[in-house]
Amino acid sequence: MPAAPAAFLTQSNDALTRAAKKAIMWTYHPDLLATPVPRYTSYPTAAEFGPLDNSIYASALEGAAGDVSLYVHIPFCEKICFYCGCNTAAANRRQRLESYLLALQQEIKLVSERLPKGARVRRLSFGGGSPNALAPVDFVRLIDSLFVAFHLSDPVISIELDPRSLSAEWAKTIGGIGIERASLGVQTFAPHCQTAIGRVQGEDEIVRSVDWLRGAGVTSLNFDLMYGLPGQTLHDLEDSLQRTRVLGADRIALFGYAHVPHLVPRQKAIPDHDLPDQELRFEMAELGYSYLLTHGYTPVGFDHFAHPGDPLASEALAGKVHRNFQGFTDDAAPVLIGLGASAISSFPQVLAQNVKEAGRYRMMTSGGVLPVNRGVVRSADDRYRGAVIEQLLCNGSARVGARLLGEVRGGLQPFVERGLASIDEDHVAILPVGLPYARTIAALFDPWRQQSARRFSSAV
Ligand code: SF4
Image (cartoon, rainbow, N blue to C red; front, side):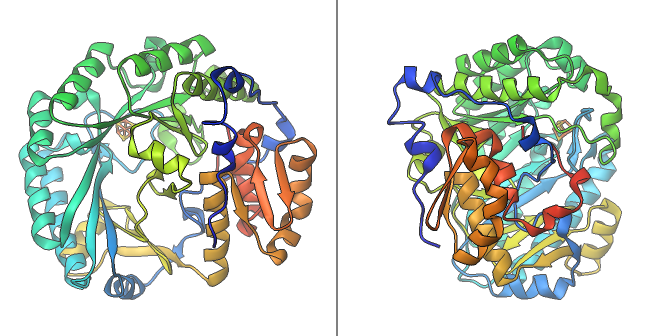
């Protein structure tokens, strides 16, 4: 698909003065946000995954060529937060961690044996869970085995970190390995919100983490923040944004808290009545967007922001950002291989997910079996729709063929009438004021979305 102009960016960044950026006012249309929609970190989304024979995954691995990215899932955390929807468990038993790492070593062997020699690993990411729930010595062993097993070609290495369990030893390990990109789970600085979400971390822990990571050579530091938290006010959010900016975050991911206790039982600890309503969530998303733009950050897609100088900002301005399971990214590799329980691999022709249960994951890998059991084979139509959705979410515009445009024209009309989107021949654009509706507009291109709304969250 030919690259489309970056509508979000051409109209909301360089060309605009600071005053003009302030003038971008979002309008709340509750009817257009009434239906929950996916975050589209893949298309089809994980909700569409069904049973998948692991021989399909094996063939995809054997056919991989060129640049490949690796994601390693560490499903353990020191303390479990109430709001967390990740596949993770308490890291309180040494034996549990050891047997998981052993299974991971077995999976590394199984996958690397199938990957052709021509496939070069250019990116290596660790997420979870919290990779720093591992002992630094175990992490170094894991890195060593990845370097031995795969053809790693001067990879960009990134890691997600929990500031509560980061230590000077861990920071030294990060410096020793040469990890340049790190992401801190911060969410909020407001103590009452931290208590309500079961994630109490003092500002001193964040400041200390930033100092350690900068000292270790981390040049791209992301802060994950959230709005829509229990008891959170606009003031709380602005205060957290300000502290994040002052601490020098190169990237910020500002997520709306998705309250789905029917899918994530641990969220039952968060009472519904403490949550901001939809209109306040909308105001919070708008506040975050305008605050970060007026303080020099470049918007990336609908919920990421990057400081000029960070590679993600320059890729966004060039219309070269992508979307994968880690969110908006400057990683252009067509193949992402997920290692670890519940990790998802993405190939142009197939999406494949490892088994979620750690026990079953261990059993399959120790038996020499690739631990994939779910996924979806992507048809040509899936790939086409996926490319349109990715372009819309990353750049705010996409070229759309006549058949698909005919299919969605009626659904797009309310957005066009309210000045949120435009259609120009075969070109659909989400206008700057339509940004909070980006996921809803993208969902018009997704025929699966006529069902299963309860699985998703509000677009803001
Ligand atoms: S530290 Fe992160 S991954 Fe672990 S429970 Fe909290 S939110 Fe989830």
